[in-house]
View 1 (cartoon, rainbow, N blue to C red):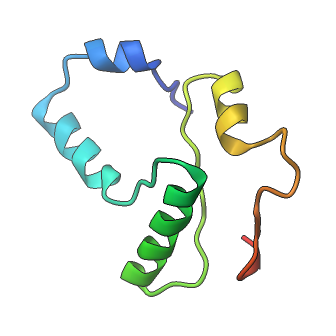
View 2 (view 1 turned 135 degrees about the vertical axis):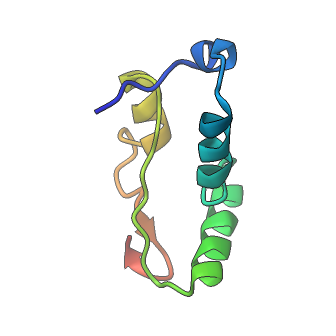
Amino acid sequence: MQEIPTPEQAAAHPYSAAELDLLRATSRTEVVGSAEQVDQGLDELAARFGVREMIISTRAYGLAAKAAVDGADRPGLLQDHRLGLI
């Protein structure tokens, strides 16, 4: 597994054209924002791809940041009121 850089490391990295292309391509399916924005963004992605289920993956540069993003300290976060467990 590859280490994910901190925001400062990412900002300072001299990206190649191929890396920038990859970042642009992967960002088309990323959802970032408040809980409401993420909820809406996931609905939009599901509609765009015509799916009812998705695999959610969080990228974070450290365990503390990942736990905060994943909501590891908030049981039931993955309960979706429309579909049940996602």
